Amino acid sequence: MEACPVPLPDNSPELIAWINALILEKDQWQEKCLQIEERLRLLLHKQFGASSEKVSPDQQDLFNEAEQDQPETEGEEETESEVIVPEHTRKKRGRKPLPKHLPRVREEHDLAEDEKQCSCCGGELHRVGEDITEQLDIIPAKIRVIENVCFKYGCRSCETGIVTAKAPAQPIPGSIATPGLLSFVASSKYVDGLPLYRQEKFILARLGVDIARATTSMWMVRCGDLVQPLINLMRDKLLEAPLIHCDETVTQVLSEQGKTSKSQSYMWVQVAEPVIGQKIILFDYSPSRSGSVALQLLDSFKGYLQTDGYEGYAAISRQPGVINQGCWAHARRKFDEAIKGQQDKNKTGKAHMGLTYIRKLYRIEQTIKESPPDERKRVRQEQSLPILQQLRQWLDKSLPQVPPKTLLGKALHYLHNQWQKLIRYCDEGYLRMDNNLAENAIRPFVVGRKAWLFSNSVDGARASANLYSLVETAKACGLEPCQYLKTVFTLLPQAQSVEDIEKLLPWNQKLV
Image (cartoon, rainbow, N blue to C red; front, side, top):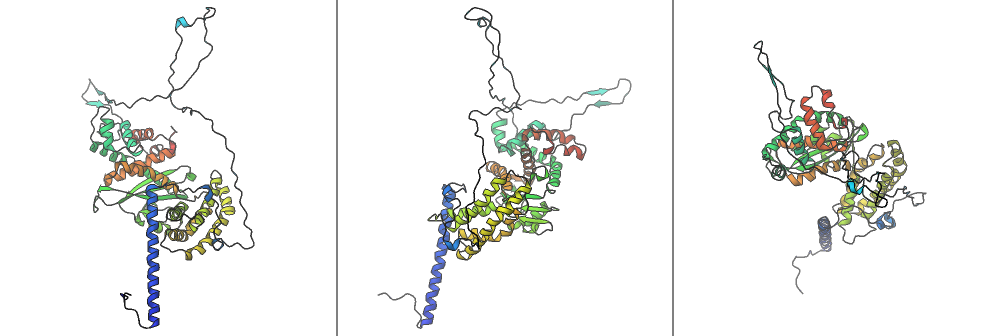
């Protein structure tokens, strides 16, 4: 028998303490191994599994976990809630009709003259009607040169000099770019996600013109500066909203003072709900993700601010009149990650239990999404609050039973730490359960970033923020962004007053 490599204590109390320390160390290593295994399974699922957070139908309304995990109810019997599915009209199969606003070109097809005689009696045929079928055609982009001819006038009777007519003010004075070309380049990059080098090499070159990428980059910076008065008016209107959604994402700027080319900067987005009459989406560039940025962007704002759990919004949330609201989508996502990180995929475990509670809350929201705010508030007070009370009881029981550093532990603690912010959506009918409005608004920027990767300068990043703000708000207002930008680039240089600029705001334009 081999001797123990570590000398054992001689007396029993020291031996017991030594054994207990070994047991504690073993438990700690087991917990750490469990955390690593969970993270590995989650990473594998993100890499190879489905990204959807939906669960299968047999996991819905799943409250058959052990009794110790059920919420306590005194003097109440749990009854099954009845879900009413509204009637729906079956969609008619077949091709969708072409939009009515598209221009129509009538091309008539007639019989030849020798075919306009009856094959039976030889009499002359007369027209009795017509069959109309529609086809969709497209005219490829074409480039033309606009010659601005300014006539000169002089007086033969005296020497007063020459008087020359003035051409309309241009978005970039002295440039060869018309409002139409600028709107095409801007919408191609900020709407379609086409980097400027692709436009240079593949689109403009194919159309027979050679315009360097440095030139189109300069155009975008100048256009971003041009629309700043519109952005200022949009921000004034956004700050009047009772609810603003905020989010941020990383971006990269190559030439930025005090930072390396590989360092991260940030694009912030703020979305105002249409309760003020318009939906406004504003992007802002900042080299930092600190709370001072939120304080600067939302200076003078009073109302509900809906964000994720990022602590950078804590400073603005402490301002008088600002109420921070949490995001249930982030809470749900953490329980979903806990399920994906499980080894046995136990469908009756705590992760599924928490997710089922949250799904019940979302199901209520689905039934009232088209209802007016007063009705939404009433339903939330009557139906959502009791579920939230049950969820709180279950959460209080579950917190001490789960190691805090596991995926499930993190989900439970996120729910606990964000609880007061999460339940605030029941306070008013115009509030939302989650911050998906901001996440959806920032998605076009994220998609475009995958193509153009970075901004070369701070001026370029700020110009991108302004132009993204315009095109995304225009889309939210039902406008065709390229045509809207052309209108802005044409009329904004000619604006003489604030009223002229206000007429160019997206919600003051006719739908295209």
